Length: 489
Ligand SMILES: [Fe+2]
Image (cartoon, rainbow, N blue to C red; front, side):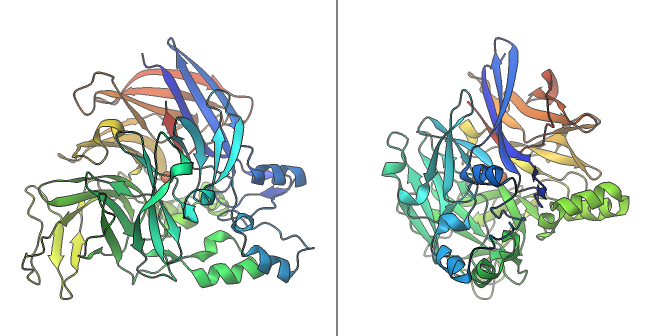
């Protein structure tokens, strides 16, 4: 039996006083932990004591705006106050770190997509320290999905004015010795891309600018006149998605431009190099409508009306797609219309366009209609950035995100786990310590009940077969909400 702790993060409190958070991305961060010891499982949870949480609770209302929730402005604040606050980022962003849990230099941190991260005690989940990453790293925001190399150094990507910066945090020295290792110029500085994740391969950072962008002008206007943060995101389908390949050795970007038709994504699955190609697997949406379906009003509408539910289900079809980016030598002769993908058994296309950009059309790894793939995970420890075969993800049955999937990217076959009236969370793969096979390990997922909202269980699956090995059922004193991401340590 596995031993260790699964620590997860997500929105736990959807209402403060009479105020209700308006979007699934907004509720107060609730940290949850499953300790697995000697065949027994212990569960505990604790609200992250972010400054935002403390301020909200002290006022008994929502006083800090979140992604889809606009706080009621302080009536005593003048326009001049708001103008001055524009120059103080900690007045702009919430530190409600509800997205992920990561390990940096042997310490655990809760993260979202702001510069503010929170150190937590891995034993009792108490909040230890509020950290403003801008004190140590030259970025204004950063993703909640950093990567590790084999030495457990941490890489993340953040934003600066006019560029995206990749930062490295050395395991032994921590934030104090963090540094920018690559700068990637923004294709459209006044409409920088939204990004939630990126990839590493052996030699490259892989970063994708997508057609979901942030409108700087809207952000400034809204700061003075109000509005939720979701308003500053714009879906501009005329924009092509742009893939950046940046050398991990010297931080320089390859000069060839790789583009694709627009798609929206939160999560990359994995990327690797194969025979002078870079392969990038991504959970893709056709547009940004998924963001609208996660507003609480839309969720309630879907719960009340089957037609609304079906319509919204159509919006949240995420398909795993494989993009193939051929590496081009400086003396290669490019012929317009030529497909540069030389990989066998690959239907992805990379065509030289008239302006000599490489237009990439992906190969589907999962069906678009039936088996939505989201919250993907792999055998990260042994296969991140390397040629791999399997990923695990949440997927749908009808309009419900209620299945766990194992996808064989070679055969495109899928194995499912599901149980009526229960919703699993993001699968976490834990390899067997002496494993040889890529899928020799277990899948952990915290599962909640649709019927009784204070019941759930920790599910343990055999990753080869997706058959259940064990479950630890629990009943909590209060509502047991869904969560986003987690970490096993
Ligand atoms: Fe995420």
